[in-house]
Length: 296
Image 1 (spheres, rainbow, N blue to C red):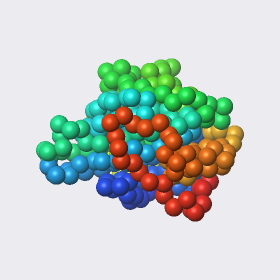
Image 2 (cartoon, rainbow, N blue to C red):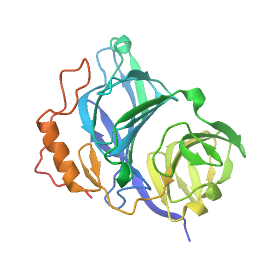
Image 3 (cartoon, rainbow, N blue to C red):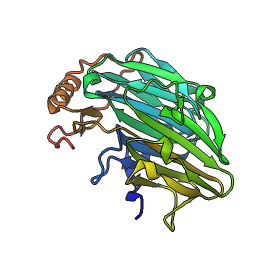
C-alpha cells in the first residue's frame, strides 16, 4: 500500500504586486500538523524598477517562518524589528494577540536587477498561546543545525528531529527539514518523524512506490513512520509536519484562530486601525471583503 495519502499541486496566487505558488491550505487538507499555510515565492527575476512591496498587514494566532533560497527581503514590524533576511537565515515572527509587519525589497537593491525565491510559512499556535504577546526572532544560517546522513545533506530549520533541536523558538512539537542530494540516494527517515508529515519537492525528483514525483508538489504521508523514498541526483526537498491540534483552526485573510470570535475582533480592530503601527510606515493593506466566509 502506498504511503502517499494526497498530492497537492502548487496553485498561482497574487499577494499584491507579486505572484506566488500556494501550497497550503488546500480544500482536502487544510493543515499538516500545526502548519496552516505555505507559499512558494518565485523564482522571480525582477528588473531595476520592479520590487517586492507588501505594505503593513496584521496577523493573529500564528508564527510566520520566512526562508529564502535567493534574494533579500526587508522585514519591519510593530515591535520595532527592522532586519533584512538573506538566503539560509530564518525570520520567525509570532503574532499571538496581534502584530503588524511589512515585507519589501531592501532600499539598496531597489534600483538594480535582482532575484527573489523562497518559502513563506504559517504555523498555527496552540490554543493556550493564541493570545500570547507577539515576538520576533532572527536566526543566522550558521546557527541552523546541519549535517550529512547517508549521503544526504540535512538541515533542521525549525523544531526537533534526529535528536537535534533548531534554535528557532517553536511553540508546539514540529519539524521543518531540508534534504539535499548530489547523487541518487535512498532515504528512510520515518523513525525520526512524528505526527502528520508532508514532503515538498523544490528541485529534482523523488521516487516512491514505483512513481516519480517532480517539483511544485506536496506529498502528504499516510504515516510519517513509513517515510521512505529515493532522491534523484541534485534534488532538494523539504519535509515538514508535527503533532496536529485537537481543535480545528479557522482562517480569514491573515488571521488564524480556534475561535471565530477572535477573528471577528481582529477584523474590527484592523478596520479601526487600532493595531500597533509599524514605525516608519504610513500605508497599509486594507481588510478584504469582510462578507467572505471564514475558511475551515
